Length: 98
Image (cartoon, rainbow, N blue to C red; front, top):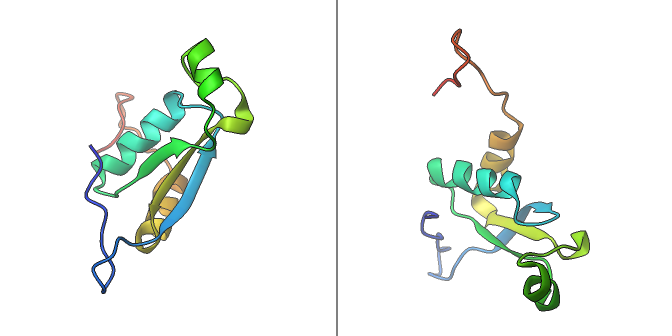
């Protein structure tokens, strides 16, 4: 579950900033959302467009023009970008470092 969306100084929700856009809600988007959640970075993943027709026929958005967008609060955008660009480090046994 995503962390709570932060408020600005006026008590209103902070503006959303686009982190990435993907062709569909596939494994990559799911893993990204899990990574953000594990680092307590709030996110919102939503369809780029109302592609109800594709969802009814295929169960998901099958046209990349109607992909998913992942947003984070403006105040956390740089942190989220750094997280995405960080190298994955592995232990000698092949497992990822934590």
